[in-house]
Length: 490
Picture 1 (cartoon, rainbow, N blue to C red):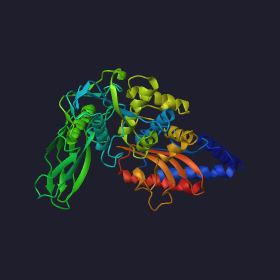
Picture 2: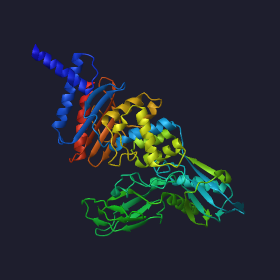
Picture 3: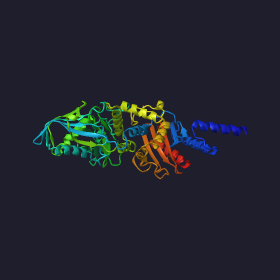
Picture 4: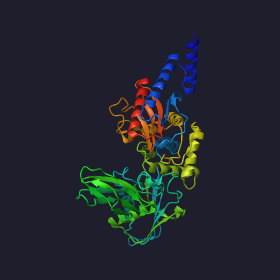
């Protein structure tokens, strides 16, 4: 009897430590058994010495399972769950951002004797994803607006106004060797094509020669490619090597490609507002609109009522942008919206720091422990961005009860079906059962979201693994094994 009492006391203390909600003795013993099973999966895995953080809650915030839930971890892109929630809560699903075209001067005989002004409004969506691979459609809108005003030539300059945001191009903590690629572009309120050029490389040439290259938009001379690539024998390995010389638009290409291989890679540019207006002028020339002046970017605030507005281009609704942040895990959209959030909330120049200040205030309001929250960016690229799986699970439970719960839920990827989870959980009972957000940076793999269980319950979960050295596919397999056990248990 004494041993039985000691065992019962041990179980009750363990349950209290884990934060389980007491219902019946048998139920709590089953939960403890699940805890032990998942701990065993981790201990017997290929990466037992990594930091594993696993939290499971119901949508009423009750903790159902917790392993290292309050440990500080790098969440990678799972921090976007918080960023997007704060943006959606503040702006609403139907909110839009705008890019405005103004002119000043006089129109005589089809000539504008004056200047063109583009007012950057923070729209991240003038890109190939939004416009079916051809964001030049938006440039065509602006050209049409000028032509409909009777303008065939412009005797003046083109200005790109970027006063909406500060002049800091990146969040703190982004690593320099990422800055050549599409997932780490410069941030500007006047942006085009995600502030990238799309390079296409075609190696249908003799072995030992350089592959052919072309790029969007319009093989623009805004960038300079130094093509030192080499075609190797068929069946050999593709070794990617692209690097933009930082501070310039000179891009070094040093890949080796097997004969017959082709690929497209979006690469970042510097000075996004100049890229925007340069692309506009080059495109306008193809449409018969001649512009004779220079290209000027400015941070000067204007009294826009003194200018003639010719056209307003509006972004898709915010619900689309939130989907790009969560489902597509787009860092550019995320960081653009962080700065815009700062401008909108504080009615001042948008900055990353101010945007993160507001997100932290939102986190505190929804019940997250902000003592365990450190944000250097909104997208999770910065290694110094830290939180806990417990707080991510709490946020997910909060958002399931939010006014915009359905928009938030639909912004997440479905397991085995779309976006970053298209090729995961195939031929598993989890296929189609998860609406979640993936995350990855070197040494970090995360997955958090909503799980529809075998017993038709919905639970929220967060699984974050830090400091692993095995292939990421091994970590994915362990995550799947953990979630399959949860799926069957609840």
